[in-house]
Image (cartoon, rainbow, N blue to C red):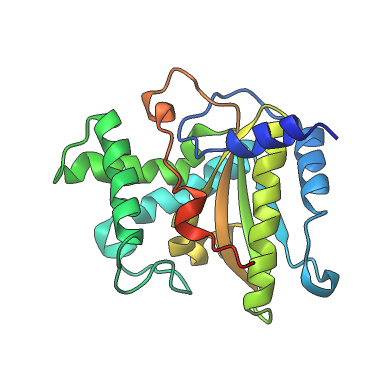
Length: 227
């Protein structure tokens, strides 16, 4: 195994927010999901269910969500089934959150208080940032926290595997707000809960937002070595 290739796939992963329309073959998507499914899961339960959207199916879902998102009264009636972020932010988490947001909006020329452009940028989530492939991840309602941790590792594998094949991704919790629309459009069974979305495709290297590289705290700040 080439450790340098593994390191490169891990360290080059970032959230890309503008994609080329270049098609990703179904065989390539199936391959990524197949290798990602080697992810660890407690007692091998493999809790992931993945819905792959391309073409007209992806466009229909995006359009339905955008209809709701662009109507404030309708959007207010939609909310995630579970808390995405804490009720009260504390440092250092709020500091990191603010910095990446400010850095992105600075690149895009979106000033503080510019609600119209902020709304438009947020809407880009629901277009999968123009990626040719949209992924919706669902999980069985009976499963608890351990399965959610397993699921996170699986999604990490999807993103790392994508980098190994020259593709980029962007994981998106934004989709959970509109889980009822997603459930209807994808005919999800009642026992499946919408967990996350993800954009997948080839990076548009000409897009200014893709020059954003978020910082990582050094190991010394969050790892404790016990001898």
